[in-house]
Length: 488
Ligand code: NAD
Image (cartoon, rainbow, N blue to C red; front, side):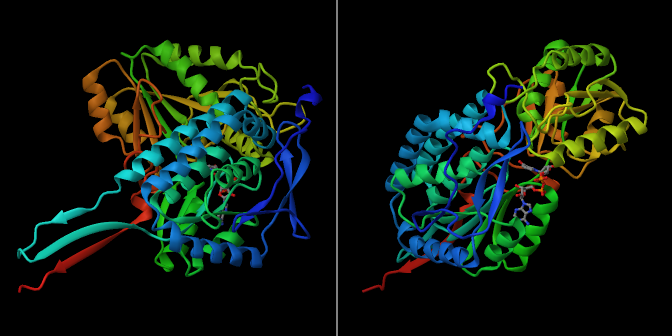
């Protein structure tokens, strides 16, 4: 690895953002930021004090009293300017994501640039937050249903897509007329600070967006239990999501939960098997597999199995793994040491239960948090790798004989986020789509997470949607107005 490539010369100035002001450490507790490609700390992130959190709550509450009454045209104008600034600043933001999160630069750039589309979609869609008129029982009465912003929101966003996850929550809350306090990922913070600077420079009034950092459980419990916060949105693991949902439920707070997944992939023997395998290998490589909707349990028809494994292994064998700042890197490090430990444990468990290692299987002997692209075949359904979200570049492949068997195994987990089907039969595609227990089904490609399409899971994968025309549903409350005119 070229140590030169990991020198952070222009890293983001890390800060809190409260009431329209960027606040540096200035005596606050700080936390080191680590480059996953080297394992070395290179920046310090300030943590919010209790006083900072109180000021964020007060400023979000005050700003809500005017932001809620802005016209959608005005909110759309800010969001369009946000989109422009995202495009302008995307190379620098992407480079910093590679430094503190690890993904290859090209992927980081794509993550940031597609966010411009999310901002534009919300700029447009907020003009269509319609109510309705209900026919009255008397001609002197008018009955209206109006949808109003719910109030101050708190969002908690993860490290795997640090810009995208924060941006999606910000544009949905602000587009609806809510204000927001957002805690980003402390491990990979640069993207969220860059996002705050973009909203600031786009003219968002002070207090509408506040960014805080700290010990996740301390911040979330303080914000969720505050009477000022009316709604929470979380993206992360199912375990953490359930604990935040319990707290939110106890305080009657609305919530959107985008949680873990373990996406089944059903490959039928009438599919173009080699192309599917190569496509899936490249898709699984993205962000080193740290994607909630990554294809992650592979059920392949017995007649297609050997061809599928060979083609998948061909792509994995040729992957260039390295520092994401190097131009030719196709897969970067995992984001943290703890993910490498998880990969090792999942592989050891699968092998102990009889799985065969086709390639990889171990951490790379170099600095940083690198794990080899790994394929295991014949993985039994009770192996940890088949029941726990791997969130890494480890691929379990198993055979199936009948469609009913494949469906039963695909639906056997509590997760229900994404699912994938590869077949050239329309009737197989329809049959399977109707029966998969998942919030998203993608057939013969990866067609998910666009601005205009809803993203969300069922079962333990969460509740509510981000994106699509559903995007504002979680941020609005319904008010019924019944108005009579006195008969002269
Ligand atoms: P984790 O469960 O400790 O944390 C997941 C995320 O939640 C992190 O961003 C973390 O900062 C945040 N978090 C943790 N506790 C919190 C709390 N009490 N309040 C608010 N936020 C809190 O796990 P991890 O080691 O960081 O990530 C590994 C697992 O997380 C993966 O196996 C995956 O299941 C899940 N994950 C899912 C997504 C997703 O897009 N759905 C994203 C990142 C991580």
